Image (cartoon, rainbow, N blue to C red; front, side, top):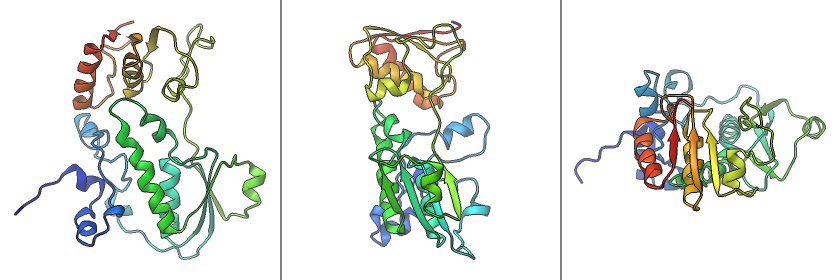
Length: 258
């Protein structure tokens, strides 16, 4: 070709052409077309960002990784995308970095999101970052439940806590009942799910919709309740349109103003 045009791919990794020319294909941070940080934020009148590239929109401050004046011993707690990126950058700055993750794999909530229909490309975020940790010389310890004592035993100069969030539990009567599950429970299939399912969409993002499609694909009858005008009000518009169409085709019943 005489000309190749890429937009979102270069938002995710501005060095993509250079890396490709140099044969460093494994170093390319590949766009997964999630649209959450780029088009999704632009449509809401917010500054552009990127779910994978924290430098996007902050190029003036962060574009060049500066060597640390005083190398330190850094411990990162949590092997999700935030912890992995923090460990990678710290190592590139010259620090000695150890990352502790309680699971037997890296990825954190990205690994959970990748189990939803049409979201499997999310898994590549963890794979890509894992390769970069190895190249940067980060010591990764899996299956470690970090405690204050175990962290202090490593004698760190700095500790980065990147342990992520927990599922939202709505403050409604019955939310603590045994038959009430989180989206994590469903996607990880750690608890049985009945035939008739009601999803309370309290976050208004893609979580509830993804779980609805996941369950519909398994033959469940699914209803989604929301107090908003429609379910998934915070989902990026293009993603929402295709996902909403699939949900309706699979028999999912949205119940707005509920």
